[in-house]
Each structure stands twice: as C-alpha cells, then as structure tokens.
Image 1 (tube, helix red, strand yellow):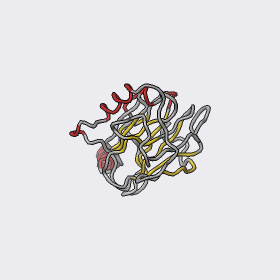
Image 2 (spheres, helix red, strand yellow):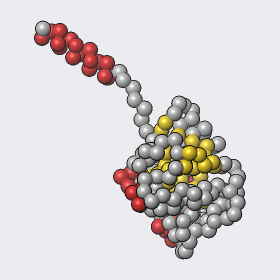
Image 3 (tube, one colour):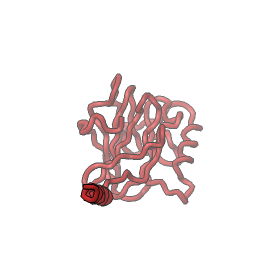
Image 4 (tube, one colour):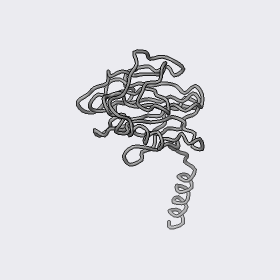
Length: 192
C-alpha cells in the first residue's frame, strides 16, 4: 500500500512538473508594477492596459514591450480618460497624424463598455498620454517599445510630462501609421 501511494504521488508530481503555462510579457508599470496580460494565439498577442484603474491617474502597465502583430488594448476606468499618441519630445501634445481615442469611455465605476486598441506594425517606439485636462502633467503617460539605450526611456518621458505646464494639447485629426479602433469590451473584468 505504501509503495503504491508513493508511486502515485511520484507520477502526479512528474505530471505537474511537465505542465506548461503562459507567462506575462516583459512589461511593467502602474501601482504594484503589474505586468501586462497576454491573451490569444501567437502571433496576435493582446496586451491589456488599464487607464485609471482604482481612480489612479496612470496607465497600468505604463511601459509595454510588444512584438509586431501584437495588439495593445486600453480598458478605461472611472472618470473620463483617453489615450493619445505623442512624440517623445512633446509628451502632452498630440502627434500630428497620431491616434486619439476620444473621450467616449466615461464610467462612474468599473470600466467602460468599449475599449480602444491598435496593432503594432513595427518596432518604432510609440509614446502616449491621457488627453484629459492635466492628467498628462501628473504622469499619466506610457510607451510601447522604448529604446532603452537611446536615452528616450519611459522614465525620461514621465519626467518630461511632469514638467509640462497646463492642459494637454489635442488636435482634430486622428489618423496615421497607427490606426486605432473602438470596440465593445471583450472582457469587462480584464485589467481591473
């Protein structure tokens, strides 16, 4: 009896050791430095970013490393937030031709019924901010595929945003190389 129990336990431990699980991508940011979630089959990995989770004026995670073909999906929490593309040089000013999600995501609690997403077309860094009033100058900014050895890092970008005076600058246009789309929220619990 002891030998059979010991053998069964050994088999179960061996089976558990061979189980493979998907790990989050190498991203960080936000309260608790939460990693981005990944869903779906490769190469279409979706990185979930929470905007304003817990009432905080930040994107979680605020720095994403994403492969070409990956999707960056923004889920919006309470208050009214947006995601707007900028340049590294001007963190709180919409990049001409850059994406702008608009402010159609306001909710009193939980998260919005819709999400905003775009697909990574190349490894060029993408810089973004919340376009609501002075949210950007509080540090509500983020990046996709920063180049660490260039000096244009997420830490430097946050520092630049915090030096910005006044409200964010938004343009009427929303187009360009990064094409965003508003979609129904596929997972209302994701990121929150």
